[in-house]
Amino acid sequence: MNPYILTTLLFGLGLGTAITFASSHWLLAWMGLEMNTLAIIPLMAQHHHPRAVEATTKYFLTQATAAAMLLFASATNAWLTGQWDIQQMTHPLPITLITLALALKIGLAPVHSWLPEVLQGLDLTTGLILSTWQKLAPFALLLQIQPANSIILVALGLASTLIGGWGGLNQTQLRKVLAYSSIAHLGWMILVRQFSPSLTLLALLTYFVMTLSAFLVFKLTKSTNINMLATSWAKAPAITALTPLILLSLGGLPPLTGFMPKWLILQELTKQDLAPIATIAAMSALLSLYFYLRLSYAMTLTMSPNSLAGTAPWRLQPSQFVLPLAVGTTATLLLLPLTPAAVALLSL
Image 1: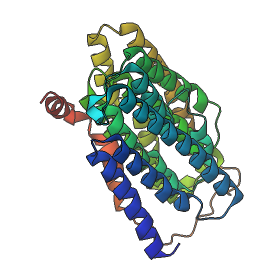
Image 2: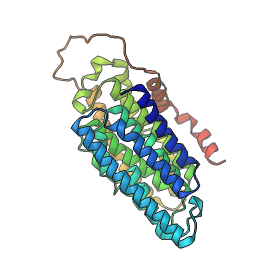
Image 3: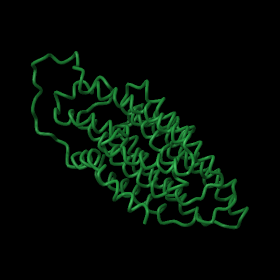
Image 4: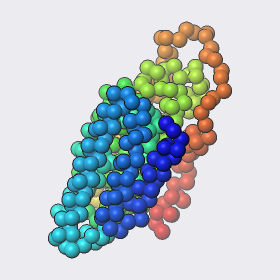
């Protein structure tokens, strides 16, 4: 892609998110979300592969549906209450509609079906943008509205953690595994959103760091399915040794960074007398952990049948910029000791 066009599209992505962040009016927020969607569509379809075009079409249709629903709900709110302000949502009907529209935008269960299919059709770089940056603007809106009925958010959160765990069990494609991982992580964030919005934000940031590391590793080793992971030991031995730790951090295993948000969320849910929900969420984390362990096993404890023992690969200089991977991996593995600092910041 022409670098000028690429720069313009990335600028559009950033501007759309910034407009949604800064808006207090529903029309302005909707406009930012639309800019975001329209800026990423050429990035998704840039390879002109039928699979990429199909994924782009699916993405456009779901995002357009969610945006129309959001606009309808905000217009309904203005009609019922005379208010366009995001903070002044009082009527339960538009609040529920907007919550469901934003859930569709970020891919929460049960409106999640588009996310694995779309992510599977994209290259890893665009997939990374879709899994991280594109979640920011809808999340900013979700954090600003007060839910009319707390049951809706808890139901969305529980459904997402369970479906994110179950859906990933049978997958061999890494992008689909990461999509179901994204659904499960979003479920954890939505579960605690009404009790501690700052904790939701912490979980979102740690999810971004861990997902960045996972996507960059797969990009470096050029892996798109489990079989290709088995050959990565010959391409990058050091990264192959660290990748299982990154995956286990995504699964939320102590003493890695991914344990911190899960630990704090379970603690908060227990404080709110929601021990049964905390138990179901913790059990669903075991489902996710299983498919991360499966990837780790394929990467470190199996040898690919295609490569002959004793044939060394060409040791060429890496053509990719590996500093983000180094920083992301370090953050993914070593931030758990900073939990007291995170808790202190959350309580401010």
